Every structure is written in C-alpha cells, then in structure tokens.
Length: 326
Figure 1 (tube, helix red, strand yellow):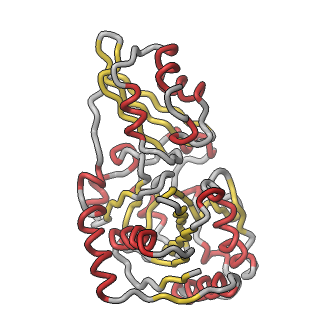
Figure 2 (cartoon, rainbow, N blue to C red; figure 1 turned 90 degrees about the vertical axis):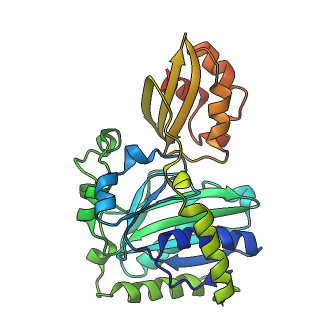
C-alpha cells in the first residue's frame, strides 16, 4: 500500500488529488489530509437544501462537491480527513466497516471507546465524530471520511442547514448537539499534528508492504489542473436547479431521497433527484427513465423496473422509491 504524504489544505486540490491517485496508481493507497474551512457536499445532494449559502460566503467557507455519495460535512483545520483507495472493487463497495477498522483500532489503542454506528458513522458515546462515503471509480473503490479532532462545532452548526427530517430520527434539536471532537476524550493531550502523525504511523505499521510516496512538483501541477477544470467549477459545485411543481422528501435506512417533478397533464416533464444515498450509477440515468412517464404508481413502477435499483439507490427498494416519488 502506498502511504501518500499530503501537506495541502486546499479542499479543491485535495479532492482532485484523490482522483489523480486513482488514475495513476494500480496499488492500494492511504492518505491523511486537512482542509481549510469547507463544506463537502455529497455527489447527489442539493446544495440549496443542505447549506446556509449566505453564511458560507460571508465566512469564506468553500463549497466542494465530492464524487462520493452520502451527506454534507463541515471541515476546518481542526478536522483530519482520511482516504483509502482499494483495487479490490468487487467486494468493497459499501463495506464501511473494513475501511474504518484501522481508524477505530488506532483510537482504541489510545483508550477511546469509539464505534461504528448506523450506515456510515463513527461515534463516541453516541455522538458522531466521523462521517464516511464511498464510490466506485473504474476498477477501484474510493473510501474517505472525516475525523473531528478540534473542529469548530459552532461554525459547523451555522454553516449546515438543520433539516428536521435528519434531526427527528436522531432525537436531537440541532446538528451541533449530535457531534463531538476526539480531543475531548484523549487521556494524554496531543495537538492535531501530533495526532495526525500518530494516526498515520499507527495505520502504516499495521499494513504489510507499505511505502511512503511524495508527489513531485510536476505531479502537483497535474492535480491543480484537475481542481481547476472540475472541482472549482460552479457548474460542478451547484449542479442543476430543476423546475418543479411537485416536491417529495423521504428518509429511508439507505438515506434521504428528494424528488422534484415538473408535472403537466399528469406526465413528468422533468425530474430532479437528490439525496445522501449511496449510488454506483449516475442519477441522471434515473431522471431520464422518468421523463414523460405518467405520474402514477403503476407507471412509475414500470419505468423504474427498467433499471437496477440497487445500482442507483443502495439499500432502498423499488417499493420504497415509488412511495418516495408519490
């Protein structure tokens, strides 16, 4: 496994680097990295539903769209991000426990009783400190996650919209009240750089055949080009804003599904589907399948049977999807 050194804190560059690594190496990779203030948006999410955009702009918080599914997270220099890239894509998609196990082991070695919770979170005492997301990229799996170490939870609470559909299920009144920082549970204080070094070395020594890799200046130039051409582009960040006269939002075990339909004369003229669900395929395929379909359960079911639901909405059934749309 290649252990990538990454001193960069620009979030657009960091996501471009993940893509560059997957394009350039046929070896498994591990990387720790940090961002300046940023909101990381899941690939299929609606930016206007998730983020307090005026506050983010006022505070200079960058908005970044990932290539992975899942939900929105706030990062600053008090967070550490981790990335695993696996070439064993046949068996690893949505195997969150496999990729979070080395992180949990490193925390347990510090006496911190962290655990895997729900579909993709790590928690301490029921409070979340890590959200995780994945995608398939060619023959590889990209898994990355956040580790809140000394994050500004007040700014986090203001930057992200507190959506009732999420909080109701957690039995809490705000985003801030359901998250925590790892530093609060340390028996022996470490600053964030000491913790990062500890975590990097702990994971590295646990994996046979590991080696360190530093990018050259020419390779960083290639990464910067990806960031400029894709991750910094408003069209990629903000995505589409569909016209609609029917809106539905439903939360399932597999995630939240938001559906926007422009319906005229009982037929769907345009569809926009968003959410924090995990998907292998491009959600535009589903939107295209629904175009010009009669807006009734039987017709929607017939249209959706043309695709493999689990490829686009992991752990959400056909019946659940039809109910979400109607």
